Length: 355
Image (cartoon, rainbow, N blue to C red; front, side, top):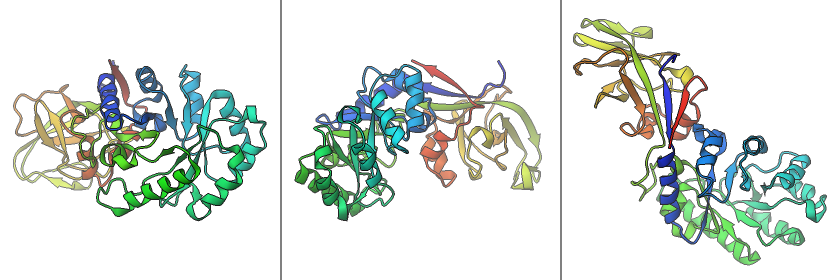
């Protein structure tokens, strides 16, 4: 039993989202990105649930991939940050990990291996993100120098820097730069993330990389209103207090009642991953109605004004985000993004998986 604070993971919604997003690019193959413990949803469980739909998974680095193999995940796994050492390159070949090469050192490590020991690899090109990748002004030279290493399944990939800004011209410019390079070297490409899949057909490549939309977060992506939230975060009311006008709630008296009020104390806080900087008035869903957050977010507890609800009882479950309160909405009230809120759900919160 214990504390009845749960993140419920809806695997039917997950599979639905994958199918919906794949339909936007029927000529492409869709990779499911399950880095950062599948954005807080549980990488092993998410991979198992998608095993019949997904040909390739993607994670950030080799440690995440090893954990999946230890739990019986057999699909190829793309390492988005590439190899961290020459040993990683050898390990990748052994375990069928696909490695993104993004530095001259990576080509050196690859060339040092016998051909049969080389893993499947992609080559990352920096088209404007300026984070990782072969710089564009040297890409043709690097590719020409290493042409003998290229395989038929070597993919040129890049990453959209402003995908959340649908009208930013950099998006189309990056696409054009990568496509020109792939045409020159007759190689397949991968550029589209969730926003790229749904918004720019020109961005679709041989492989698309589906991340945040897989988990039902649609904003700011157009045409994705059919997505369903995969995670619902719930916590119970563990206390009710009636206070008079002029009395305050929480640390530093940050909220003062303007009328006689009923305050519901909820068993979740920033140690569980609820955002510490959620603003006063951030809403949650209780008994079919929205209720506002009052007072500061504490380590283990939140307080909501439930004055206008009738029949509220200790034990009632509050939805912090999910089907009725989008995680994107909560994130905006905390000057954050859905990615951060989902990945910060702590191990204190029990996960429940429903088919």
